[in-house]
Length: 289
Ligand SMILES: [Fe+2]
Picture 1: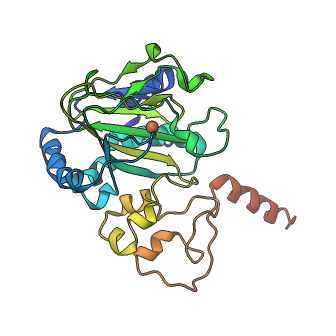
Picture 2: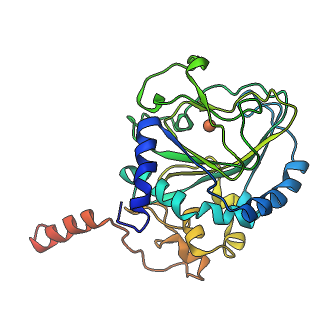
Picture 3: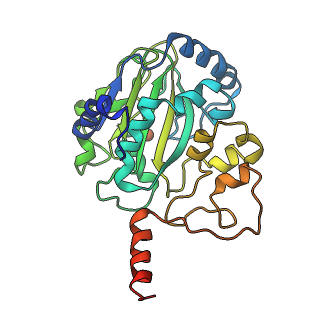
């Protein structure tokens, strides 16, 4: 990871992530942002039917594609401290990161606990412990033991554990609205049971290595006519950016070009990381190519 102004402040967060597999950042969202977020999300949560499935839940409501539904989520996805933390955690696995999903999750009273899982299970390959994804769960309401605060198995990102891992070893991410739970894609976790009489609401902003297929198809959620209105860092984060070497191009160009009136039938351009570029140049200079 390149040096950044955030790096010093990040160190304790990274250390906690490496040790426990998660970290909670209290009050990471401003009070007025939280109020705006609630207003923006509520109509979508009200009109969306409940999930259908033992994984996503039967008394749970989920809403995807939040970038076009909530200006506040656009800002949260680019939150400097969280984005820098995601980049630092995922840097060993990729040339650049991308947005894996945005999802509002409302766990209603009566929802039983979700099955323990690692988010990286969605990619059918052994990462050998490498971090390919990281989620930020923003608390929109208070997260309590009673209302289904996320269950986490500390240290399980470094262990081989079974699906029926002992619930007694889990901790719950109790936090106040506006706080952020960050956890690794290799950590065993699950939604908690809501044994209270009130809803528990949060939003997930997930990041992953830039070469992976994403949980939420970002180009369908935000096709060019939608994505053009986003700030360029967000456009790049949702995938309008190639991943060096040479992955994900549009007409041989960085796909950001499709949002900037780029032309098809343009010359194909190399997209190489510096190390490969230097290797090729050395071969050319040595007359071996
Ligand atoms: Fe999960």
